[in-house]
Amino acid sequence: MPQLARQAIAEGIATFVLIFIGAGSIIANSITGGASGLIGIALAHGLAIFTGVAATGHLSGGHINPAVTIGFLITRRISLVTAVVYVIAQLAGAAIGGFLLRAVFPESAWQVAHLGATELGTGVAFGTGVLVEAVLTFILVFVIFQTAGHSEGPKAIAPLAIGLTVALDILAGGPLTGAAMNPARAFGPALAGGYWSDHLVYWIGPVTGGAVAALVAHFVLQTRSPSS
Image (cartoon, rainbow, N blue to C red; front, side, top):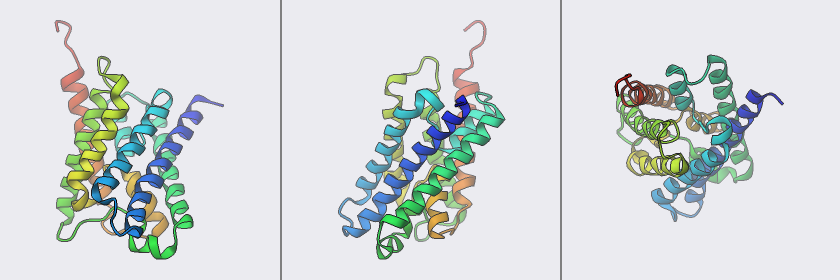
């Protein structure tokens, strides 16, 4: 099997895990009357990313996120073809995860939780949502570039650092936007459940924040002059 095909499958599976476990934890929290709460939801997402990056990082880089892939593209770390294949695989994995959640949970349960879809909190405007998602994704992509994406970074703990960043971002931004930090995370449940409210927030914010973080990390913090 061609290398790119194997990388795409890895990205699809890892993104599927994120949706099934992450969005699934929101539905499960609703069923149990909020037993796990925000902390449980944050841990579910963080652990899903931790395991996904650990399992696929050596093969595909463990992007699991179009915003991350775009960051690698604009810093010329991957080709346009690879980036397009990755994003398609990520969205496909997210869609499969969303539809499987819809199939395995009772309709009464997933409808109450909106299938774990990311949505703006009460009183949060579109622009504020974009800003929050941009900041949260900036933090995430910055950590990715400075750990897994840095030649001298602590690659051994990169999956843990990335997963913890996701969990911390959700603890801070979850009540505001759902803290997607990832267009695929928003896309899967939205497609399967039909919850498209303010969906552009979860593309504009993460792609913008991720791009800025990638540029800062790559061209400011990591690029060395000949005399350095």
